[in-house]
Amino acid sequence: MVEHNSGAPGAASVGRRTVLGVGVTGAAGLVLAACGGSSDGAGAAASSSSAAGGTPQPGGSSSQVPVGGAAIIPVGDTAYVVAQPTADEFVAHSAVCPHQGCLCNEVAAGKVICPCHGSEFDAETGAVEKGPATKGLAPATVTVTGGALELS
Ligand code: FES
Image 1: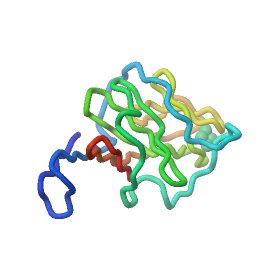
Image 2: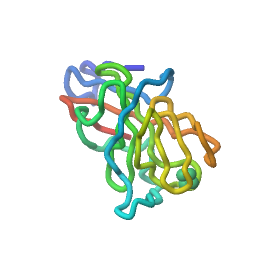
Image 3: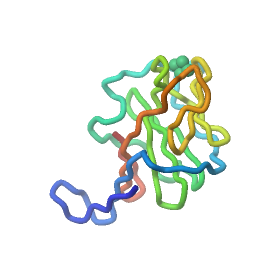
Image 4: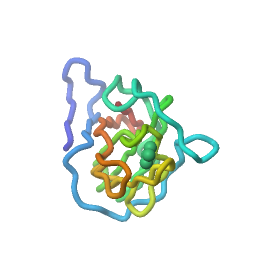
């Protein structure tokens, strides 16, 4: 789903687009992404106040997200999974694991992986594919302006 903002009050510039992290189906060969977790590799519990749905915050570049792939984009003390199923179509989910709140820090073979207890999620839809998590990653919003990502 893509919204095109074109001059609405509060909108930035023409060409800015907002994509919600819901409603995308199908899996593509997704690519390993950057690590957004802690330095010890065990992941980090994320602040729930900074999870999906807050004020948009700058976070990386669209060039970090491969077409047909996904990347973990750190933003402040949290992170997001941003996928690009087709060129210029972006979807985002919170990288906060719904099991116990660790930050997922790896994308491999189309799956987002939580380092704490091994839950796996579909990188495009956020759906849980392997427990112990019982629900998927929370949808988030990604806006791309001139190649810069804003996430909330
Ligand atoms: Fe992610 Fe337990 S916190 S699997």
